[in-house]
Image (cartoon, rainbow, N blue to C red; front, side, top):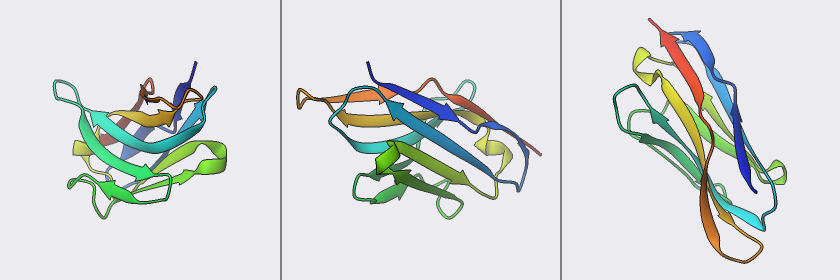
Length: 120
């Protein structure tokens, strides 16, 4: 059973920074892409950033220039460096991964989420 475990959330003042991590563990062949989504109370889950195994990244419009996604393929871990945080960045942040299994089928996984709260 594959698991995604996020860490690094917390409370930060507006203008501050946080770094989220998400580590994948379990039996897999490889991870094709990993990303971050977020969901604020009463709102839908929105795309934040995604990165392929080759390092190609893309971002949601609201975080471009402030957030940076990166990954360590050897550790099956993806990171999200968040700078210049705003109160509207407050949300539960979820890690997501497209995983190529030993069976060569692809499956999508979600982490349990980590809370990020930005105080103004």
